[in-house]
Image (cartoon, rainbow, N blue to C red):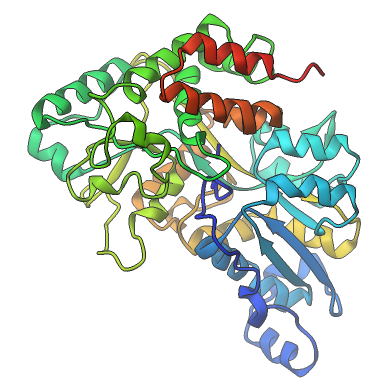
Length: 452
């Protein structure tokens, strides 16, 4: 799934809702003074509002919430719109209840297309304005626009993005031992076996613990293997239930991943045995690479944020630094580049000019460049200059997303109905890595798929 800068991106602690107090609002003499210090040319198109306020919510927390608030500070100053953001790790569980009761925020940053579809089906969402749709048509691919569309109505533009299938490693260890970046899934398995033999310990470190969302990091493994082993058409059929969850091709992907996640020889380096997969937090699971105890860690581009925990030594993320990442390779060396990823859809629950002005700004290349320049994230917005990204890996990630030859597919569990993607799939993964057989797990997940 996805902090994703939603649950898969941020440590689920107290939200930084009040971070922007010093940045919000533009009234009176203070507003005039602030505006004089900001070049408002890029914001004239959004209009000016006298003391308008727009509320927003999502799963973006902590440092990323701080940067989010900073990304619209000049917009607030120039338009007079105050944006009050509230982050919560319970957003996904609560937003439909709040919407049904008429208590949702004006804007929601929804990290799952499946959840957006549920909100749209409930009749709670406001269709996107012409300005938002025009930006989306200009700056995103048709696939990305599709994720914000329900029953032919366009409800929201993408915000940020992530690439899920990175394998993090130590460049120094690879150079010292002559390890090469694998070009196929078979070569990845061979590399893993070679590292296990050389070190006499498992090569992979894995953490699946994420509170109520425990299990999601392993769904990312399954989705990567489904896309690479069976291609985008079968992947699409799987996430839309055109083929059942217990289809033999899904079992094949599970079993291929199981050669790592269910093997004492492959996991869990620097942490413990296989049983520790479900108790180790996803935020800390890759850190044994820094100490040389682990060699490989599968996690998204957003994991860059976690390499430098507060109070720790500075870790350089670079191809010649302390840690870097390569994409999970294809099944065959000549297969086209295919990646899974995630992001947020910006939806609205209130129909107002100031709300649509905010949404238009968030769908623009101006906002995307502002946010990417603040560090730690990427965007699939084609108007973003990749060089604005904060690291070599994030520059590479943006270039991958912008490449028209890249086959991109949204995180599968995020596309599935919530009863599967955010429930039985996660729970099934936990049962699976702790000993349950593949077919039994797949049959249970299949039985949970909603009838309509």
